[in-house]
Amino acid sequence: MNILQVNSSARSYANGEGSQSTRLANELVAGLLAKNPAAALTVRDLAQKPHPVLDEAALGALFTPADARTAEQAARAALDDALIAELKAADVVVLGVPMYNFGISSQLKNWIDAIARAKVTFEYTATGPRGLLTGKKVYAVLTRGGLYRGTTNDSQVPYLRTVLGFLGMTDVEFIYAEGLNMGPDAATAAIASARGEIEALLA
Image 1 (spheres, rainbow, N blue to C red):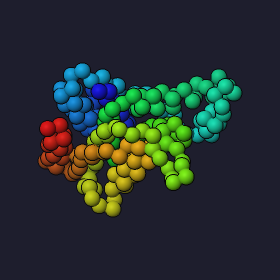
Image 2: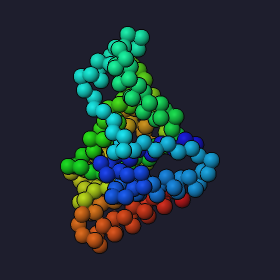
Image 3: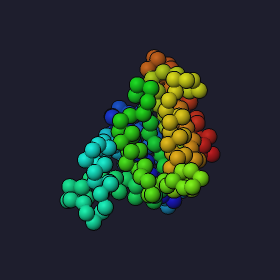
Image 4: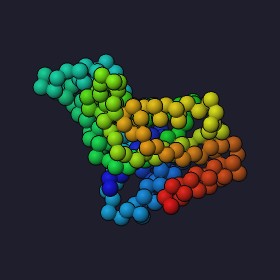
């Protein structure tokens, strides 16, 4: 088993300090490794190593044939290629997903923009789009300051279901830690609830 952990908090330090989403993602991964001692783990920390935005220079590189790219274009395309290769090799994907202003972080959006590539991770067919990243299990650890689960203010879950499903990743489990900014008792309860969800998923 190959596990890919993607930490997307702006405070996503390697040891998880300062980031609840990273800390909980670390705990989930530790549980997966305990059950699968031979598994290989790759950690992509988007705060320690931010991925560049999808801008005009990036589009120019990606839409230029590989053998015609300048050195700068080749280097830019290679950054996206590395993320795609990591994801293709993964059997299990663990995403640390904090909520920023009702959405995902810019770090995670840059990662998604990098891995979503026509004819590589999805393709259009006569019957519609088809995702090419099939057969993967995805866990998304969601951390929020308030309570949004199941409400119209939760834009993260619909978006992630849509974009991951578009790429072929339809087996997605969401773990929630909500109310983290609603006082110490609420934060403690939120972490305990998320840990309970993790334990249930690993059982």
